[in-house]
Each structure stands twice: as C-alpha cells, then as structure tokens.
View 1: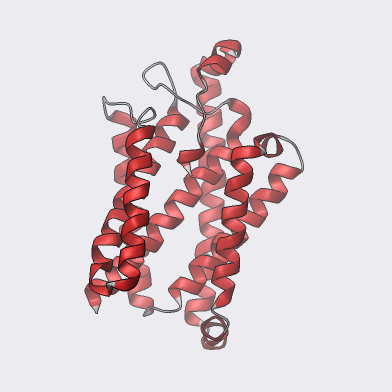
View 2: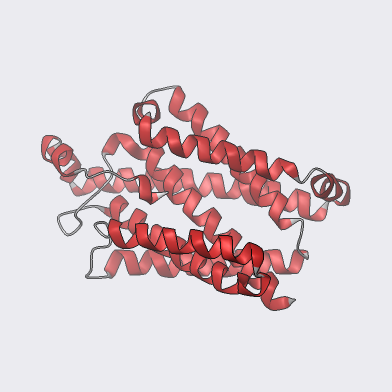
Length: 237
C-alpha cells in the first residue's frame, strides 16, 4: 500500500533520465500491465471458487485460509518497509510478487464465497468504475496528495478504531466499511500520482521500483474491492 512510500526527490535528481516523458510512459505502462495481469488472475481464481460449488464449500469449511493469506500479506508489507532492497533484486522481487498475488487471490476468494455471486460481480463493476474515476482524478487534479501522509496516517488510525468498535457493535459496521472505502480510494489516488510523478508531485516511484509500484496499486484495488463487497452485502441484507 502507498503508506509505505518514500520520498524520492533526491534519487530523482540523481537519475535525470527518468524525467524524460518517454521513459516515464514506459514505466507507467509496465506497472499498469503488471497490475492488470494480477487483477485478471485474481478475478479468475475468485470466479472459480464462487461458481464451483465444491470449491466454494471447501473455502467455507476451511475459512482459516483467509487468515493465513492475510498474515502473508502483512508479512510482505512489513518487508516492504524494512527490506525494500529485496523488491529491487531479481529473482526475489518476482518471487515476492507471485506470493503476494496468490495471497490476495486466496483472501478475495475466501471473502467472496460468503456472498451471492450477483453481489460479488456488482462489487467488481463498482470497484472498476471507481478506480477509473480515481485514475482520471489523480491525472488531472491540480492538488498533490503524495505529501498528505499525516492525514492518511490519522485516517488509518480512525479506520482501525472503527473496526475494533464494529466487532462489539455490529450496527456500526456500515460506518466502518464506508470509511474503509474512503481510505483505500485515497491510497489509490496517492499511488497513481506517485506513478505519474513529475514536478507537480512531491513524491514519486523510482524507475527500478516498478514491482513495488505494481504491488502497492494492486493491493489498494483489492482492499477497495473487499470493503465495497462488505458494504454492498450490508446494504443488501
């Protein structure tokens, strides 16, 4: 997620070639292609478990697979903070990317099988529409969100507290998931602006960080979908 981003200004000054518009377009295309492939794989895995009754019952019976997947995701996110060099070296960055995507696919599938297939694909459509709109906003908005780390950190704390409260007060859950949707929408805007870079944005990804950029953006979209699915399920019920 984008909360693990770093200030890239000094390294950008050292690498002037990345300020070339053609190099930047290649970088953006590479990241978006990786994200698209990851999302397609995740949707295919999720669709299999949603529509195949045997696979659906398997995940409902072995619900703890989702907890294991979440533990793997958190572990890799921690590695992004303290072992960031691993995500710039081959083949480690590709191995970690594959593990990261499989863990997300397992988590999404474990969540999706608890809902009617119609609700799942409504959430997919709504998530896709929101991501497109956020992409347009990130590209053309005159404001820079890449330096708003204090605000994002405070919002993360608020969402965390709301999640704890929602465990004891189920009726509060709809407020919690609504703020979760808002939080990951902001993360997506920040990641996209860091991807676009340029002089108008305080922070940006380095050219060698295409795997990290793809992992951040992919994870934000997945968690936006999970919160949307939960929200749509609550509204439907």
